[in-house]
Image 1 (cartoon, helix red, strand yellow):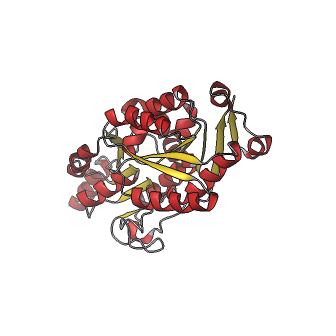
Image 2: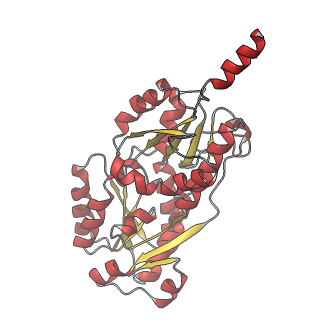
Length: 315
């Protein structure tokens, strides 16, 4: 009888709802849209927020100095899984906990940066998807050269706060050398550096613009795009969000697909699979997106052969 009472009481105990926490670079207002593919895939997998899953977010909005304390907050909340977007958030989360599973929606080269030991066998408590943004530098320069046949000088704006920057610079310089393009390297540390970067680029007669990755630059994407238009600088950007707010074009990984895959990683972990047993994936789907409105605004004609290859054209 006592056993029956115990089992009945246990059955009546509310089941613990999994708690998924986000550490992301965007602001609260922009995260709703950027995380939409992740949330949609979770719903498809049977998770309904407030019923069988809870979510908590922390936004660092490009302020790298905030990351350690925000990651520590999520650890104190005892989340079941932490989802990160971007290299800096993945690194901060890894430093904050060795126990809570971490899923990267995307990051810089996770092996090269020491975030995981190996793609096939990541070890530890972190897995997910790793970006190859730096490796796409050559393709982006080729696109600029197709759009601007006489291209000889490109300004590359980057932030030292992003761990992948050194590799990005090396990859870009290497690709530029073979295309006979000079790279004007411009560092931006604080918001006041952004306008100065454009002033320096135009003063040294840069004909086009490229951006490094990272949360600091991403958090100022609208201002950067506005200055590119003001200075009539064609730009190729690290992700599609820049093009959606007025940047000229991007060739990049399909981050919507990466976020959907990240939801599948979270699902597997909540069902008991350890992060160490889930291989880290590299992206296998890419997209070329071109903003024709911006091209017209800056007086640039996109060649038909480039337009024909675009996965999406914003008109």
